Image 1 (tube, rainbow, N blue to C red):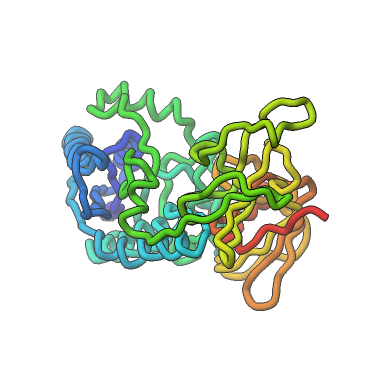
Image 2: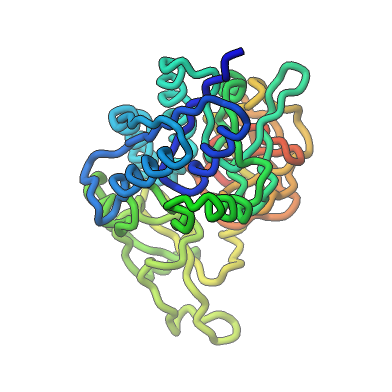
Length: 368
């Protein structure tokens, strides 16, 4: 019986490299696919594509798998980056990793893999897939500190039925140990952070190239103007650094101290940025949210009632009550108020370890 062919996304990082070795050990025929998703000003200063390709090829040679490069830059620009800019222009804070997984890694990549004769695809994400009663479930990774199901919540039954996550049952420490034992050239390579098209470059400088912006007043809930913002697109709810405000005598707290300033709200109509002092200011707390652009792993919404949710990556699950809204949206009511719930980010629902899907936060619902 011929081996099943698995096309694996290889980024040049340690996770996908160890995934290649694991799949080989499990008896699959493995083909590595290196994706280039960004071409504009792709240089070594900020984006490490050239170095990553060299690492991926070196690992493929050592592990004994074929590898090829594929350019998805056009698809990425049309399906991910354009939406990223639209969201920022609307004053929201998008998560391009969620969109990239849905549109590139599990759509353009999957289609290309099928053309290569793949039976299955695989990635180095920390997550698990389980088949039960003919349906496929997306599960959290065993290593809770590395779980990436939040970024994968828009995957559907067709995509999950053809996907392997070789790292889902392992701890990150296991991955590093295996890489060292195999003497992989990237065994000590740092995990990538951020978005490739931004890399480590200053975020505001990057957005300046693509977005028009208009300065406006920075105001407190009491109506005091305390500064000027450089453009609403450059701020996100809960932001503390880079606001340009220090403590002021006029806005001391009850103890006479200068509490830090936080971005609390954006008023697009008046181009006003509202800022508050103190991490626990009521304007930063949220009793619930409304979400749209919904996607459910099972293909239909879960039953209304108690579940848990994340409103940002690396947040602990928080207890909530889920209800459907007219159309395809949903609302969440939190058992405990949540901090800095941000329009444009994903609200992802869970039933224990099962990731049910989610939607894009449209608006927070403030405490009464």
